[in-house]
Length: 263
Image (tube, rainbow, N blue to C red; front, side):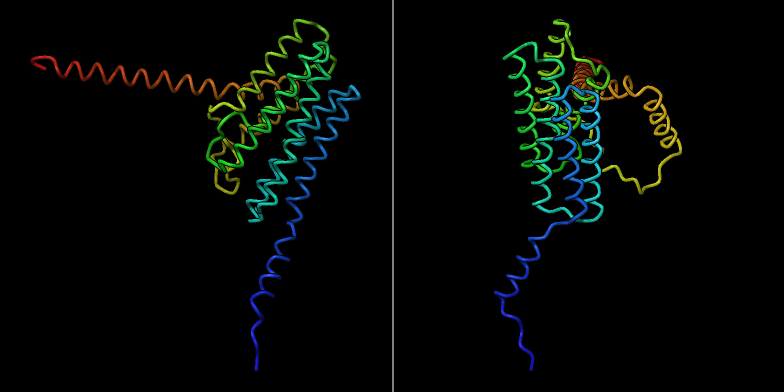
């Protein structure tokens, strides 16, 4: 005669099982956290190129983390929370410290307050993303893209910025990027780009061309790519407004023409 397991024991086993974590996504998230921390250490030591490379590594690892979690169906609430905390360090604190040490230190209080403002906007952006959930597009500039733009600038010019004019330009750019993160502008998302689907051969040619350009001139290509993506949100918004205005004018003209006598 067999007896079934009591319900409280079943619940206890389920809870014990849920306490575990999926190793691969968690290790990748830890790699993102380590890259962000290493970037902070490098910035404090004046090694701005190494700090920028670490932010780029965090960007790549963070992308692999989410994609692998979706492909292996290992997404958990713990993984999402851990990933957000790691992103605050890698894409918030690390680029903020890099920008402060690299270009804003000469501004004194204004400089470190501006870098803190960037960190706050990253935290707000990640918090809003956690509440709104996944979408086919990003609302506001993604924090990894904003951090990559800061890293690309330091990678392009790894020496400390001393010119007061350039420092002010960096300050304006940092504030603009911070506001883009908390804006309602839409940015294209590539997280659901299916690598298993068949694509035209031209796609492979374009990807290979991008890789070749990055290898030949990584400083200019990476900075241009990061800047183009950051500006794509405002540009798309402006183009959509222009298209709507033209469509409304066309409809108004057609309606007025149809209402004329003898039309």
